[in-house]
Length: 163
Image 1 (cartoon, rainbow, N blue to C red):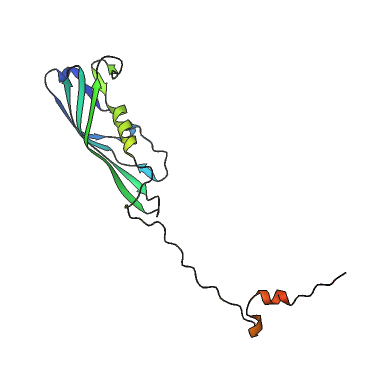
Image 2: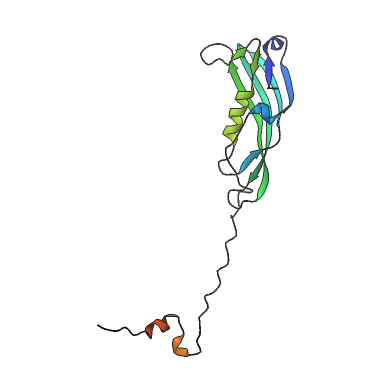
């Protein structure tokens, strides 16, 4: 079920909304292999009629399963909007879509969550990335003769015929 506010209920007093919105209803996709939504959106909102507009305030939390873009370590990231607020005009050019006596907040929530997603998720700000392989010292190939201490010495022994 989408997150819907009944405008007639706002005529009497403000409305409190608290709960979880399933991912299927949120219909959100990152198209990023490093971030996956696996848990529902948790919301705690208050809606009120404000001079012909709908004012919605509260908090939104959406957990994400991520892989660090530097070290590829899996970690959980929470998209946390603790002071989320939205003023939706009910009439005019920028009016929100009203269906009967209800307004669906789901598209607005989806947009704000997508804007909050990191471009490159990091397990921590100081992540150094993948460990670089240690490069060992190059070993000299020895044929037992001190004069042939390098592999190029064998090529110096080659004699080419002149024709």
